[in-house]
Image (cartoon, rainbow, N blue to C red; front, side, top):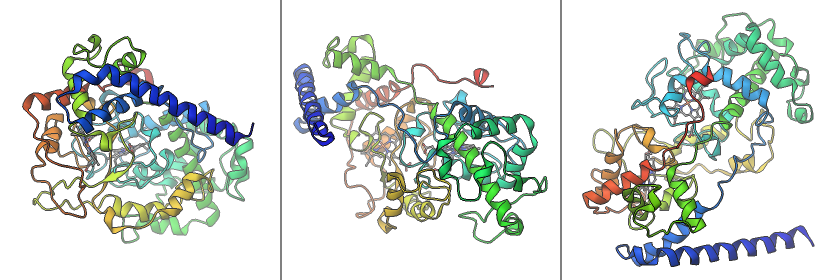
Length: 462
Ligand code: HEC
Ligand code: HEC
C-alpha cells in the first residue's frame, strides 16, 4: 500500500472517529444546552471533542539541533537563572519569568534594567507556539531569547560580553562545550568556516577583550550607538565566532524552555471524563471535577460568548493575530503597532528560522517566514494568547491594562471604549450582554484552566 493511500485511509478513519465522538457528545449534551442559540449549541460537542483527545506532544524544532538534547537543557537551565548576563548583574530571564509567578512577573509591564512597554507572558507551554511575543517578531523559541539579552530595558547586555562570560567562566564553559560536542550528524548546518567550533569555543573568541560591550545596532534602536561601533571594529571572524556562541547559547535556552510545558488542568480532567463517558456533559455538578460555575462558563465560552472563535483548540489559541480595538490612554486607538512592525523585523532577523544560524533554513518554518507579506492591515494586531494558566498570570493583555480576569470579561461583555475602526477591528467582537452570574461563570471556567501542578519551583531549579 502506498504511503498516500495509507494516509487517505487513516484520514478517513480519523474523520469517522471524530463524527462518532461528536454524535456521542451531542447525545450526552443535547438537553442541557437549551439556553444557548442553536448554532452555538451545535458548536459545543465539537469544541469539547478537541479536548477529549490526547494532547499533542511538544512539536519538534528542526531549526534547533540542540532542541531535545539533555546537555543543552542543562546549559539553558543555568543561563536562564544567571544574573551575570546583565549590565547591573541583577537581571536574569527568571527576573521576569519567575517560576514562583507561573513564569511571569505579576507586573503590568516588564521591569528589568529599565521599564518596558509590554506585559510579560508566561513561558510555560510557550515552545508550542508558532510565533513568539505579543506581535510575533520571533518565529522560534530560541531566537526569541536574543532580544531580551540586548534590549536596554531588559538585560541591557550584549552578545560579546555574553560570549566572553561563557569563555571565562569555567563552569558555564564546561556546560557549553558538553552541549556543543554532543551533536555530530547535524554539524552540516554550522555556517562554513566555523565547523571547528563544536566541541570547543571558537578560537577567534580568545582575543576578544574582557569587558568589551559590542553588538549590532538594535532593530528598533535608530542611530548607531557605542556598542554598535565597537561591533563594527571587531574582525569578521570574531563577529562570526561571537554570533555562533550566542546563537548556540540561545538554542540551549530554547531547549530548556521546551521542557517547561503548561501542565494540564482540572478542565482537562473533566473533558477527559466526559470523553470516557464516566461523566455526562450535562451533569450540572460536573462529576465534582470542576465547579458547576466553571462548567457553565465553558458552555458560554464555547457557545454564546463565542470565545473559541479565537481561543479555540487544545491550547485555547488560534495562534493568529487580531486587533480587538483596545483604546489607547487618550481614548483613541493605542499607539503600539503590534504585528505591523514585527513582520519586517522577523524577515531581517539573522536568528530567524530562515536566517544564517537556523539548522533548517529551507524547512517549512523558513518558507513561511519568507512568504510573509508586509500588510498595513496588521496594524494594532496582537497574538491571541493561550488561556491555559490564565488565572495565574495577571495582569492581562499586551500592555497589562486589565488587573483582573473580571476586567477582561467586562471588556468583552460591553466592548466599552473599544475603537470601532471598521477595517482594523475584528468584526466578530459584539457586545455580549451577559448577566453578572454569567460573567462569574466565565471567570470560573478560566480559573479551571490553571495547571494542577507546577513543573519547576525555584528551590528545585537552583
Ligand atoms: C525585563 C523582563 C524580561 C526579561 C529579563 C526577559 N523577558 Fe522574556 N518576555 C518579557 C516580555 C515583556 C515579553 C513580551 C515581549 C513582547 O511581546 O514584546 C517576553 C516574551 C518572552 C517569550 C515569548 C513567549 C511567548 O508566549 O511568545 C519568551 C520565550 C521569553 N520571553 C523568554 C525569555 C528568556 C529566555 C529570557 C532570558 C534570556 C527572557 N525572556 C528575559 C519580559 C522579559
Ligand atoms: C477576535 C479574536 C478573539 C476573541 C473572539 C476573543 N479573544 Fe480573548 N484575546 C484575543 C487577543 C488578540 C488577545 C490579546 C489582545 C491584546 O493584548 O491586545 C486576547 C486576550 C485575552 C485575555 C488576556 C490573556 C492574557 O494572558 O493577557 C483573556 C483572559 C481573554 N482574551 C479571554 C477571552 C474570552 C473570555 C473571550 C470570549 C468572551 C475572548 N477572549 C474572545 C483574541 C480574542
